Amino acid sequence: MRRRKRKELAQSSDIAFLLIIFFLLLAGLDMTKAISYRQTQPAGEIADASPVSLTLEDGDTLRYQNQTISLSQCKDLLDGAGQLTLTVDDNATWQGVVDILSIAEETNTKVVLHATT
Figure (tube, rainbow, N blue to C red):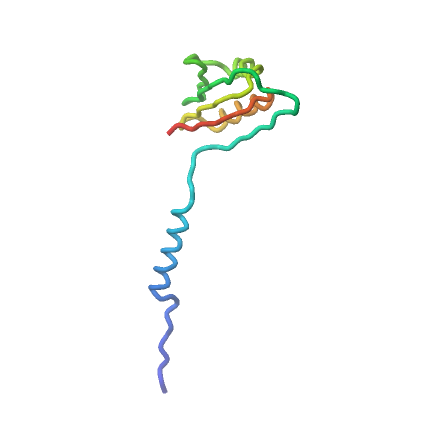
């Protein structure tokens, strides 16, 4: 009787080929720390007010022109603004970002987000 040779489950060249494909796919992924948030303005409303720049720092400290402001002050500030440029520090929490985005939505303010690293 002849003894059959066992087939290997996978040749080492097959595994190497699959690993190469896997790493090529991973290299093609674009990792970014930005959030794309687009808010539509109602028709007939023109954003002619000046843009506001805010910075959200560690501990959800909100700064406007190098002064710390509260969320209620932020709402008053955005009430007449047409656009908000929000710079978010790496150590800021997501809840702080969501709070500011909800204020911007209430005041119909367009938001541009930037993340610092």
